[in-house]
Length: 141
Image (cartoon, rainbow, N blue to C red; front, side, top):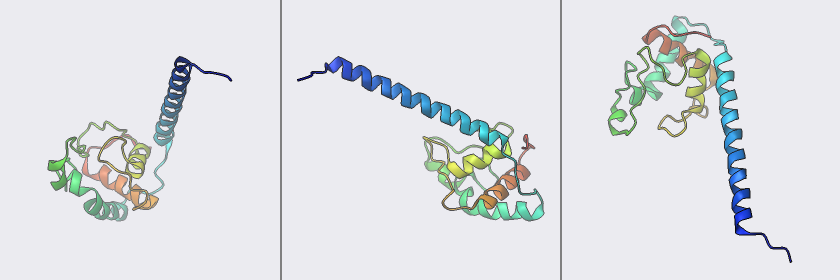
C-alpha cells in the first residue's frame, strides 16, 4: 500500500491553485488586450445614439442615473457606487471595445452584471455610442 503524506497533498493542491490563478490572470489580460483592439462596427450617428439612449434608459439608468453620473435610484442601495460614465476618468477601460466588453460581460465582483443574455451586440455598440455622446470624448477604437 502506498501512503501519501498530508504535506505532499497540500503542496500539490497549492501548486494547482497557483496554476489555475495564473491561467485566469493570463486569460483576463488577453481579454483586456483583445477588447482594447476591438473596432466599433456601428457608426456613431443620431440614429445609433438615440437607439443607445433608449436601451441605456431602460437597462443602465437605474444604477448609473439619467445623465450617467452614477446617481441612479438603485445606487443608493449599493455598497460600491456605480461608475460615473459622464466624467473623464474611466477605471475599466476607455476604448469602445473595452466599454463594449464591460457592458456585455459585466465587471467581476461588482453589481455590474453582463448584458449579453439581454442585449444583442449591435445594441451594445449603440449604448457605447450613446455613452460617448453624454461625456467627454474618449479614445475611440
